[in-house]
Amino acid sequence: MTAKRTTLSDTLSAALDNPSVRGRSPWRDARERFFRNKAAVASLVLLALITLACVFGPMLLPHSYEDTDWDAMSLGPTLVNWHLFGTDELGRDLLVRCLIGGRISLTVGVLATLASVTLGIAWGATAGFIGGKVDTVMMRIVDMMYAVPYLLIAILMVTLLGREFYLVVLTITVFSWMDMARVVRGQTLAIKSREYIEAAHAIGVSTPAIIFRHIVPNLLGIVVIYTTVTVPGVILTESVLSFLGLGVQEPMTSWGVLIEDGTGVMESTPWILLFPALLLSLTLYSANYIGDGLRDALDPKDR
Amino acid sequence: MWSYTFRRVLMTIPTLLAVITVCYLLLHLTPGGPFDSERKVSAAVLANLQAKYHLDLPLWQQYLYYLKSLLQGDLGASFRYADWSVNDLVAKALPVSATIGGLSLLLSLLIGVTLGTFAALRQNSAVDYLVMLLGNIGSVVPSFVMGPVLILIFAIWLPWLPAGGWMDFDVRYMLLPMALLTFINVSTIGRVMRGSLIEVMSSNFIRTARAKGLPTRTIVLRHAFKPALMPVVSVLGPLAISSITAAIVTESVFSLPGIGKLIVNGAANRDYTLVLGLVVLITVLTVLINLLVDLAYAWLDPKIRY
Image 1 (cartoon, each protein chain N blue to C red):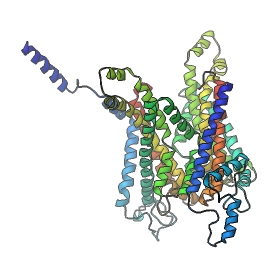
Image 2 (cartoon, one colour; image 1 turned 135 degrees about the vertical axis):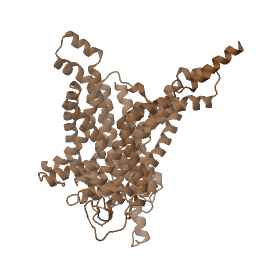
Image 3 (spheres, each protein chain N blue to C red; image 1 turned 180 degrees about the vertical axis):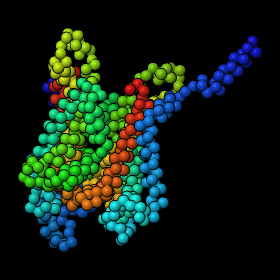
Image 4 (spheres, rainbow over the protein chains, first blue to last red; image 1 turned 90 degrees about the vertical axis):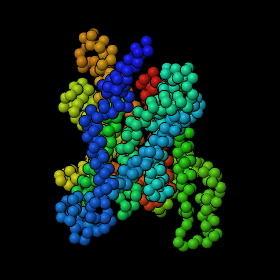
């Protein structure tokens, strides 16, 4: 009897050690699905490259983003003196300016996304958990925010409060959290009434344990998806503000500012417009595709 | 229907009040007043000026005065343009924006619905790929990149159209901005129409119609078209809002003397009252558009009641 039991558990543990039989977590499934999606992986690589270039590029290149090269003004892309993207009409190296601008655009993107995602989750989860009148009021506020022409209010806020970096982030955050709040609330409501939550209640699992072991992991997928959707939107808003001359100020720059500068001189020197526009579009493109890939990977029933 | 309409209209009031209040308070957060200047005016004159504009009253009374004048349709005076009230500036700029925005919205509805329909009926055809390509480009290339590119192609390399500016509703000056706005909207409308028509075409009542032996043309026009339009109607509200955003960019790119240009200039000049007035005006417009879209939606689809 004892010998038999030992054999059984031995067999079991041997089977579990065998990788082909080991249990697969939903996250591992999702990761495999994501890496099978070539467009999403290519986008991820591209976005990583752009980010790395923005972070480390300016340190490696022999130019500063604000210094004038008096021998090279409005120069086309060339290998001479490492002006790979050429220079702008003030003789500043365009590649370094694009990368520095990218730092600002991406930083604003990441910070505003983090802030709005946090706000959205807190708002949505609270409304979903509490329900009733609180839920109604909180969601009505979200509806109201949707009806507001956000760019105008953003312009008003930037006009009134100033063009500090953190104010730009704040302004963008205020108008980017509603999608997340809606989605999280919906998901929370749906999960709250699932059988496995009921089952957890029935076997006496404590409420915090239910929230953290059963509700949060199920929220996480949709949060990740909507976070990647928020990033391009936020970067775009920052660029629009900068393009309209309401973002960060000279000599500091961002992709929107560079595109605006390029627009002014595109007749004679179109590459000054072309390079930052290309960088911005590529970033938005890859962020969108990563979002799509994550959606397919994390939400397989939605295909 | 009537009780829904009534409730929906009532719902707009808190939205409007909230936006106006927040903007008004923001305005008051800013340091400095309209009569702060290098040259000091005498205390008596200053007091008179402040009394004229109710600036000597407590904040809540000033706010009520502001609401009162808003209700009378008066948006106040401009800080920067002497002799111009905000109403005058709006009256000059609104026709420009409304013409371009309205025409391009109509145009993009026509083109977008047509393209989307053909794309849905002939999946994987050239039209289908065109719609998907437009949708992709529209979601990735921002309007402020697309606009300059249009100028570069159609005004500089091919000198067919003026690169920007405005001449008394001359069509040549309207073509490029309208093309840009139409393109942005078509990319959304086409995608939505394609998706919804594909879904409708695979539903049971369409199969019934096919079983009856109706020709495809009749099935699409008589049975599938109307339900497939519902999602298009529902994106009209967000589209109208994004059109206003796009108008701000478009008018800057093509330097058109419209509302968008006015607000950007106002912001650059720190013309607080002008920007506030325009924000209030456009918020009222957006809220009204959303109201109309919701009512149209409820009218078209009797299942929708909140």
